[in-house]
Length: 447
Image (cartoon, rainbow, N blue to C red):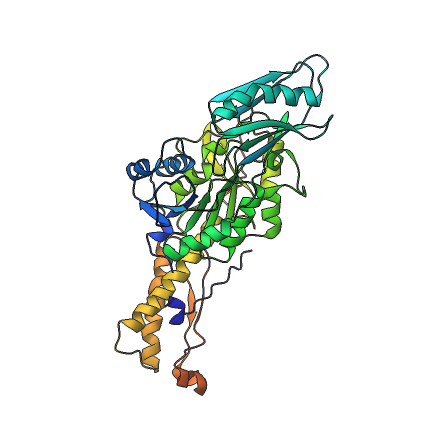
């Protein structure tokens, strides 16, 4: 029986059934497990993860980024997907330059270069890159091929089998652009099966983050009491302004998703999404801001390759309500701390936490009593339980002091509601405490 059968709580955001531990837990949708009959396993450290997954698997790498943070969450859930995606990438030439070095990187350690000649063409560059990477791609379980029609061919890198995964990125999106083109195999179907077995987690992570897969996971998450963090790598997120048809960040913003936070980093093998959750989920919901945080083990973007972040790129990313990880005044930090709709991540998480805690408070008051009488003293008992949880929200920093409540009287209730034992009319008003991200200072100096 859901708690909403006893306490139906609705909290509106007017700024624009998980356990306490569950609110600090992420779930990775994975496919590399062997011999599992269950849909999920829960881990408290990398020791358990290492027993189930090889260090080369994306599940291991994502878990390692998650548990490497300080502080880090108490636990991590890894869920078993059965509908495996076939990973695919598309690389196109953004600028044809003579005597120019073009580079792609496979699995974070292998860089492959092709230097164009004095009369460079698009097709020459693509063929040169395909020749350079073919052997390594094959060894990694992928096929590198030239596709399209001259003079506008492009490079594809595709998994030789469903479930194969690799890190693959272009080092300078001003020269080469990359798209993840993996087809959605049925992300929502796998997630539906997973939550039937284990729904006590709050943040979703996926490993195959093409536009199709991310949009499917985002749509699934929007109707759940969860958030979804997705590292997105498509070059056009940074290089192009808004309103590009294939731009995943722009699509998420247009959909105004309140439960999806996308974070741009060109190398999918960084798992900056897992690191971000590992860094922030340990905090009491609503007590934290997701902006300005360092992430252990993650390479920040800067003004030079391989993780290039020009001011134009940053402007484009911010305009799409997408997050990023960059170097500011010598310090590597997260920015901007928002979901795709533009709302602050900590506000969404704090609201979810408060909703569940209020349901628990009222439910416990009802279930731990012989009965709560339909009288003003009985209503006062429920009022005390609710005020107690609101005060906790103030103490952790989610709500500002000074909330107000409206408590109905027994006499004000409709006879039909009294007969059905339903209490209506209780409400509260509270201001979100928020956080300071930017300070404007003016001053004057005299001699």
